[in-house]
Image 1 (spheres, helix red, strand yellow):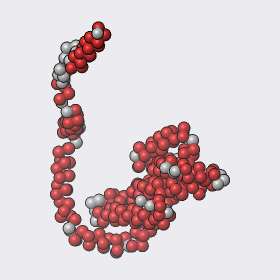
Image 2 (tube, helix red, strand yellow; image 1 turned 180 degrees about the vertical axis):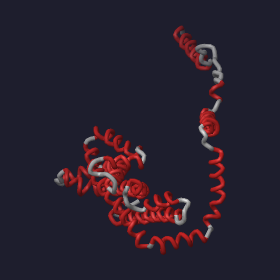
Image 3 (tube, helix red, strand yellow; image 1 turned 30 degrees about the vertical axis):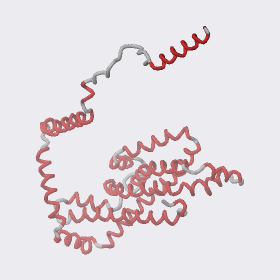
Length: 312
């Protein structure tokens, strides 16, 4: 009888504990007040400060150095306003066409295009051979990857004209196409090298293991498995580097080289004399058209050299 009473009392106490809310461990604390500085948007403030510094430099500090910033901006605005009229000026197009067909001649233009292509092709052949071989090495020896890519990145930070001019004083190079070819080669290494490493890294390891299982040597696996599978990515790097070089190669005539940049150089030297603008437009338009043709050629080359399973 006593045991039953104890059990009933224990059950009643347990029920009471279950119904009662859990005691709080301490006094309730509300949300902390937000700091006033957190309400200030950082990015707009930083952008406003940067804009204020730029305006202060252009219109206060630089003006004291006798640079007419306001006049330059006014001239730029006038040029933008006059640009639509220049675009629809049929007489300008007629003058440009007469220069190309009568004064310069299509044969001379074709010769400059060929020289420009030879300049780019020579540098791209050297850059492709160096970058693919180095990319295979970096794929095998990962410890060298960051150093090699860092050095290749430095080449792109050097101003084009400065790098071209450096080789003039080097014995055995001097004035001519040798310096521009070396400079263009250095500029082309990074895109091809990075894409070669990336393409080799994307090759499925199971395919490589299968090639090992059938007895392929490392060299056979590289030539028959890894490089063909990585080829679309490598070709993209070559394509980017080639289009980059077509534009940069226009600087070559400034250091004694050949190519379409000679028209731009001659036009700048003769400006504002007769045929100055026509010469510059000839060099610019021919360079752009050459880049478009080369880009189309790379598209066709990719379709012709890539299996259907690897096409996007």
